[in-house]
Length: 250
Image (cartoon, rainbow, N blue to C red; front, side, top):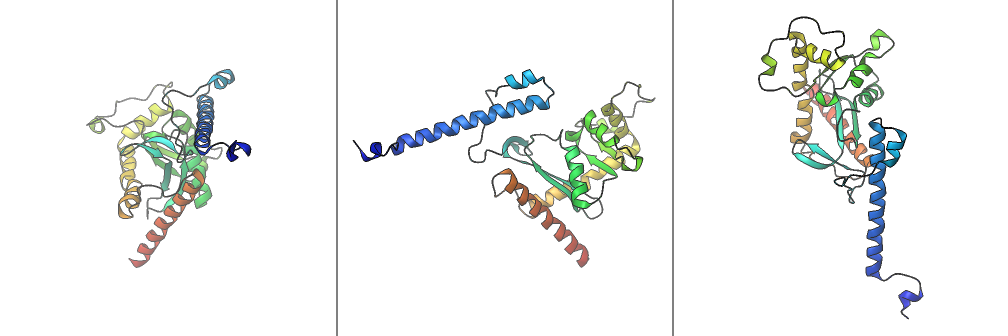
């Protein structure tokens, strides 16, 4: 009898196989849990949530299990959803977050909370792309008990088709049954709405350009959500320090 068997240990080759099998089983459990969480987010019944199973195309990353598959500017990537809120005067980052969410539909309220916590102020108005647009999000911005705490929203309701911005606004008021998204769409078609939303092009978008192009930041160096959150926070702080330094040099 070999010494390995006598001590109750598995041969090295078999041990690697057992280790891989254990990791696969753990991955399956994680995917099933994600499927249940997704079903709960979609408002499905408790029974439906319980029966939810991972889909055939659901994937698990063994290198960084906390990362997710997302659609980025350059196509599908394995990563995290990094977000910033920027004030218009100096392009300072006044709120930042990193999430595992593949889209921004559920991120508006948490982002407002991040702005309040990190800058000490509640925003008076918000410009955002169509990824943040939903009746639920627009209701949240209108729901403050005190009128002065309501947030004026300018949120795109969809991607504009070629020439759509030149089309005149349909005359007459919207019907009482119009949704918040429909009212927002008409608001952004007005002359004032177009002018306000256009500011997004030189407030938020340049900041991502400065981070990616000027500083060469293309991917996170660390793994795991908590570490990536710290890395993003440090990067945003550096951005603000540079903005203050250049303002003092002007």
